[in-house]
Image 1 (tube, helix red, strand yellow):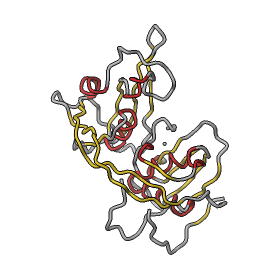
Image 2 (cartoon, rainbow, N blue to C red; image 1 turned 30 degrees about the horizontal axis):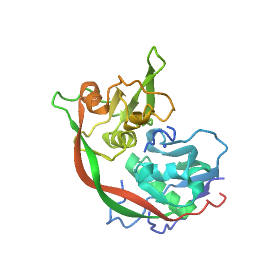
Image 3 (cartoon, rainbow, N blue to C red; image 1 turned 45 degrees about the vertical axis):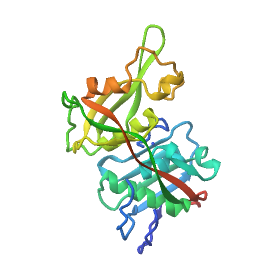
Image 4 (cartoon, rainbow, N blue to C red; image 1 turned 30 degrees about the vertical axis):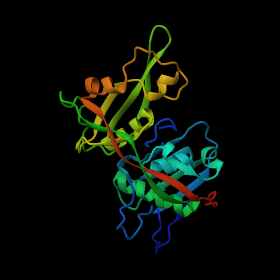
Length: 272
C-alpha cells in the first residue's frame, strides 16, 4: 500500500540491471530535502531483475528487484565500489519501489527524492569520504563529436545497456548502447567498466544516442567487461581507441578527488 508523505517534511541527510546502474550530491547549502508525493517500498520476489529508473515524463521512480546497494549507488550517483559499510543484506535482499512526484521533475531532482526516500524508509545514514586517486577525464576528441543529439522533447530516459557482438570463434566484443543519455550517466557507466572514476569534462549540455563496442578493464583478467561471464576477444578495441573512433570522445588520465560513501546506519524498511 502506498503511503502519503507527511504534510510537514523534516529535512534529512540525505540500476537496467545491477550490471549498469543508471548508476550528484545534495548541495551543502540546501535547506529542505526533496521528497516524493507518494511512495511504496516492498520486499521483492523478482529474480534476477535489478532495474531502477526514472519514469517517462519525470513523474517518478520505479525499481524492480533492486538491492539496497544498487539503490544507494543510483541515488548518490557513485559506483558500487565506492560504497562501503553496512550489513551484508544490502547486497542480497531485493526491493520493489514505486514512487511518484507531485509534479514533473528533472532526473537530478528525482535522484535527490530517492535519497530522501532511502533515508526515511531504510533509516539510511551515510558520510562522504573524498580520496585522491588516479581518474579519467572524458573530453571531446580532436575529430569532433560523432554521437547524434537526441530529440530534446523526449522525456523518457532509458537506462544504459551493456551489449556484446559475437565473433565466429564464440568470443564477444562488449560495449554500451543507450538512447537519450546525458554525459553524466555515460561517465558513471564508464566508471564501472574502467575500474576507476571517470569525470565529464566535455561541456556537452545535450542528451545523445550512443552505440560503442570496447573491452572494459575487467577483460584483462579474462572477462569481457560486461559482467556476463563471457570471454572477451583479445582483438576487441579498448576504450582508449574505441571512444575517439566511434563516439568522438577521449579519455585523458588525471588525478582528482573521488567521493566514497560510508554507510553508518541502515535498517530493513518497515511495512508500507
